Length: 121
Image (cartoon, rainbow, N blue to C red; front, side, top):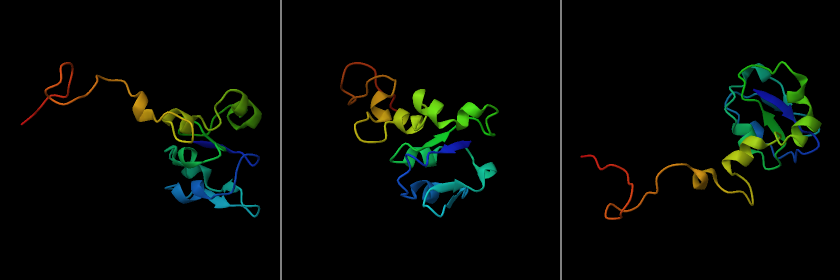
């Protein structure tokens, strides 16, 4: 569930507002997104994934976190959790795309030696 929007990091691009499938955010008077309908959050991580400033933290829980650490910006920044989903999937300049870190056998043409996907007819 969405836990935090960092007013300090937010660049007021509205991407989180636009990508949210359940319309959780309203645009605040200062341009910073406001969690207007937080209980509607589906924990899809689209807002955090699309935030170019890593200004959001979505907890993997599907209900509000019981501890205040999930809404403590200093703690989230210090522990690397603020924007961590976007970093983990490799979105953003200078990051390795998640697909390049995928675990599995090397794939190649059928004539190549080594593991490959099975051919089905």
